[in-house]
Amino acid sequence: MSRFTLLYIIMLLVITGCQSKSISTNNVVVPNAQTEIFHSTANGDYKVTIYTPKKPTPKGGWPIIYLLDGDSYFLTANDIIKSQACERCILQEGIIVAIDYLNQTRRDFDFLPKPDHFVYETLPNNQINLSGKYGGADAFYDFLTKELKPEMEKRYKINLKQQAIFGHSYGGLFNLYIFFTKPVIFNTYVVSSPSMWFSDGYMFKVLSKYLLDNQPPLINPVNLLISVGG
Image (cartoon, rainbow, N blue to C red; front, side, top):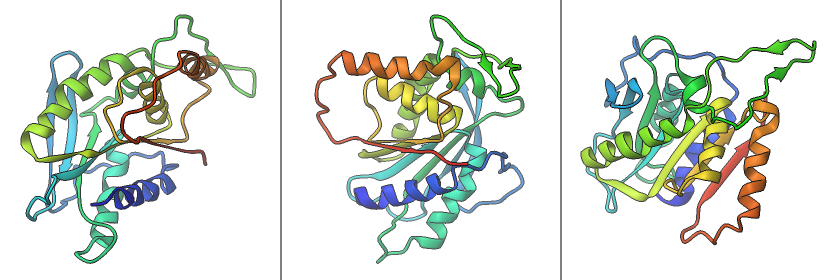
């Protein structure tokens, strides 16, 4: 799969990125996909749904995309591949890894960073939005980079130049946060309608620090795709 074809999948996901209701994959049988419990030594259990193409591994390995809020986006990503991929098409197949939770979600905690001073959101009616737990973004990043990604690269031959991560809302904020504050480990970061209001625009402070730190030029090209919609 070329760089363009992976971006093609991602752009179609961005178009559907405003969906907010979780679509459970528990009762849907998807060929070449399996759902398993992935235990994190630090974070607890995750529900991970993995799609792997049933064909020989391409030269260079499989492209891979990680989906945050995976129950909401796995079927969309899988449908894109099934309906538009073919041997002579622009779009070819790749591995999909959809990350979600077994019962009660922990997305607030996992996706949101921990500001030095947290500011509650004031709604248009002047009420205070008492958000749930927050501050686990660094630990969730460690889960991705030290546990989940290494396991995927152990099981499958992965194209290390074709790795993407997709996140919407809190997931989009998480992707921005790790892009600005962590080593670059994905080739494409997809940020769909990020929750920039979080803690009085905390992410703008992170961006300012990123720019002031005079980041050295990236060794390899990295795609950062940002969309806003509703």
